[in-house]
Structures are given as structure tokens and as C-alpha cells.
Amino acid sequence: MAKKNMDIYVSRGANDSGNFTEFTVEAKSEGKYKRQKLLRMLLLVAWVLLVLVLMFVIGGVFVFVGALLLATGTWFLYYITAPMALTEFRYSLLSGEMIFDKFLGGRKYVPDLLRIRVSEMTQIAPYEGEYKAQADAEDIKNRYEFCSSLKSSDIYFAVFTKNGEKSVVFFDATEKALKIMKFLNKEAIVMKQVYR
Image 1: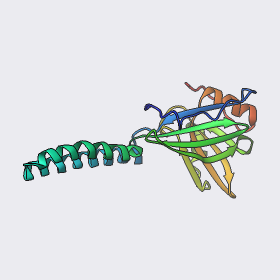
Image 2: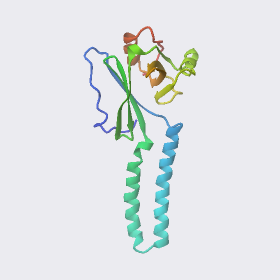
Image 3: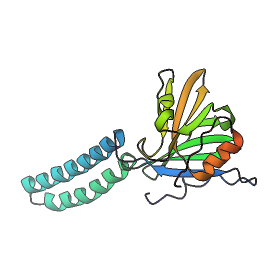
Image 4: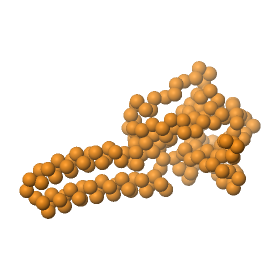
């Protein structure tokens, strides 16, 4: 994972009962995240080429001004497009709720994108085998993907109802998170060995 800006990565805290955990994962470069990284790279390359061509064509004093523009403009463009290059998701299990947040470029923090009470989840299972079809069912209206990749080995899903509509959320499971969820809703969970 990228170097964290500790101001936005502050933990939600701890729970004296031990029923607290949080986990942050970086979205892998695939799908829309791959396109965003490619677009960022193309913008940076286009900027550098534009300034170099102008320096060569105009010449003279513009060489000095162009070098200054190249340095400051590249840094500025790199800085403002940073959210395109890195997307991270964090979930926290706290006081019986699962809370999902998003971090963009190591600087922008989007809190509380989704809050679900674990006790209200009707199914919690690994996104594989016989359970995969249940997560991909046609009657599910809302899909929330807060995971590194749906192809990862430790992806779990949870089915719940939000605003009267059947919904599903995907997340990277950890052993501690599954134990807490089992404690909170043992009827709904299917346990398997995870590697975190």
C-alpha cells in the first residue's frame, strides 16, 4: 500500500470488548481503476511533450520559462491527479456495525459510504463456489464493491436490505472480522479459512 497521510488514516478507535477491527485494502489495477491510472499517465506524458515541443519550437527565453513550467506544471498535474492513481477501501467493525470508507490518492477521505448492522445481514459467505450465484442473483438491486478485486481469494459478500431493496457488499475478509461477524450473527455466516 502507498505511504499514508496519517491525518486521514486515523483509526476509528478501539472497543474494550475486543469486538473491533478495521482493515484497509488497495484496489487492484483492473477495470475502471486501470483506466484511471492509464489516463493519469497519459495526461502527464502529454503535458511533458507539449512543453518540450514548445521549448524546441519557440526557443530563446522560453527555454528557461519552459523548464520552469515543466517542473511546476508536472508536479501540479501529478498532485491533482493523485486520486486517480490510488484507491483504497477500509471497513471497520465497531459496535455491531460494518462501516465502509474510501481513500483517494492517500489524501482525500470519503467516510461512511455504507453502514450496515451485522445483525441485519441475511447472508455472509465467501464469493466462490455455490455461494457465488447467490451474490450475483438477479433480485439484488444494489452492489457495493469495497474490495481489492473480485478475483482475490479472501473476498466475502454480505446480503442485506437497504431502503427496501436487496443489496450486496463485497469486502476482503480477515480472520478477526469473520470471528466478530460470527459472534454477532452466527446464523447468517459461512466460515472458511482466510489468509489475513
